[in-house]
Amino acid sequence: MPAQKTITIWFPTNSDGSLTHQIHNFSEDIWREIEQAGLGDVGGIETIDRATEKLTITVFHNRKIGTVRKLVERLLKAHFLDYRSEVAYS
Image (spheres, rainbow, N blue to C red):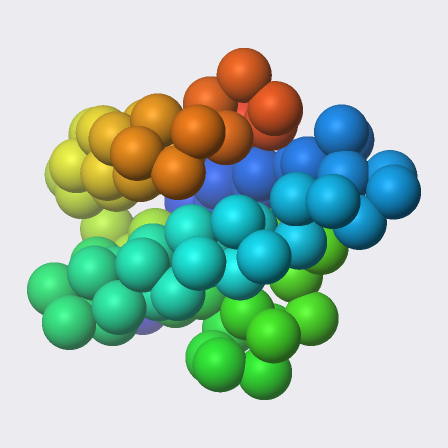
């Protein structure tokens, strides 16, 4: 079984729900790019529809962690969520 790493993205500034639409759009883009490239798992469309405070990405291979990190950073910036989120790698 391949090694797995986790990237968790929190949205602490969404306590009032004002960023929910942006978070869903970001999550859909992440899901689409990760699933299409076979880089990892976001949890499916149901997880994306529920994402308001946190999104967890499981990366399948250690050698792809850098690729997924760059993808997350790029899409957070594109959706204007880079300063409204916290990202943890484990």
